[in-house]
Length: 322
Ligand code: PBG
Image 1 (cartoon, rainbow, N blue to C red):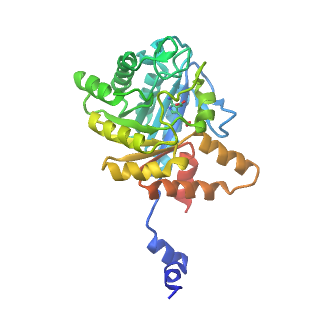
Image 2: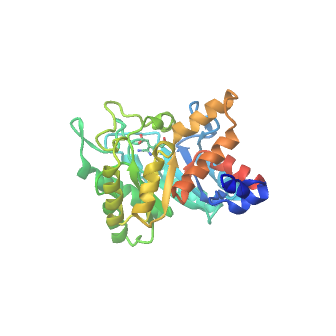
């Protein structure tokens, strides 16, 4: 009986009824680059439609997101000053600290997540402090903890360490606990691969490493078992949310993370994924709306609860129109 499956997809009404996976605006997290000292949004050439935002624009942006049904943002700081030890990352009036307060003032119900990594704050552009040409894992942990604490004190709901230092989740969990901030959640970048898809982000954040690459701390794209060990370890260290990044080329890892743990899971559709779709759409080669909704569905189908995407606002509007 070869046609039995087609009975269930004959009309749109039937297809809607049978649909297994749904994407809601609330599932989307919008990453925002916040530029210190800006008075106007600044174009990011390699990410059409995305801007480095001044703190003064964030209130309106947050209200716009909320009106479209997007309930969370992930903040990345682009500071004016950099040094070897990322001093600006922990300033009380640092760019991310100010951004958190601006968003919470405008939209108290917005869930504010912050990236915790020093690469945009260091002159060398690496995600850990250096000992010679090597990354000093353990010397980086107190810096990440101090940065996470500073974000939490400023009102962040979720801190998201992305530097890929071993024990970063445990160190931050411990520091938050000591300071009476144990209710702040940690989203572990559990499976963050050393990926070419981060290229446009590094333009946007000014965070490209000045020498070498990130292969000694981010995952080898060829490895599944190693990624699983990191996922398990993040769970043991006290992560509240897991994340897999990039998204599209790593859907098998999203599925693996889903099957490895019952924690909420985020897939990060990174800058290169966004820019590929934008570039092809600009040329008229792809139908942007269709491709974006299809890829968002694939992240959820693979097992993600949340999708971090630069398309969040546009996609939320498309979903609301559907
Ligand atoms: C910082 C960080 C990066 C991204 C998120 N956090 C860049 C990197 O690791 O080089 C990439 C996100 C994107 O490409 O959208 N460590």
